[in-house]
Image (cartoon, rainbow, N blue to C red):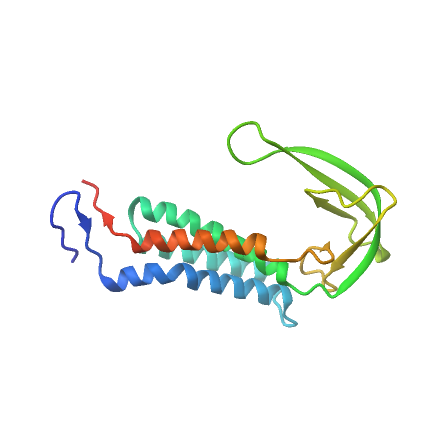
Length: 201
């Protein structure tokens, strides 16, 4: 039973429970990343439906376990951070997946689109939809934040021959844009589990 020294004092949590809360984010991230990497790159990978279902089950179990181990506001904010980190882990696994086929495509058309950005204010970002002509017919389009070129120019595209992951521009498959924020969010979720919680009084 937790001991409470007085109203508004720090909640005394069993050491085992706190330890589980602290290690859970890293364990969950490793499990989700491993599942995604296996689904994207293994010769014995499951079907798309099984891969998505397995990832969703791991994500849901991790969030439920975290909320049971970490109570109060720290648990809510930590669960949000953990969920975002696990989704970024999947994206990082996608970027590290092997794309064993590189094709030279011709840009047929570029269409610019304004979209609302995230954050305060009326921030707009421009995305560029490139219509391509590639050997074998795939991919037909690539959407990027930056223009890959003008109509008639060529671009090298890396593909997964099994079509399990999305095509990318050749040489631009670094996982770091997703891995770095994932690590920061995991650190936030871990800190939320490690800090003393206060009882609502």
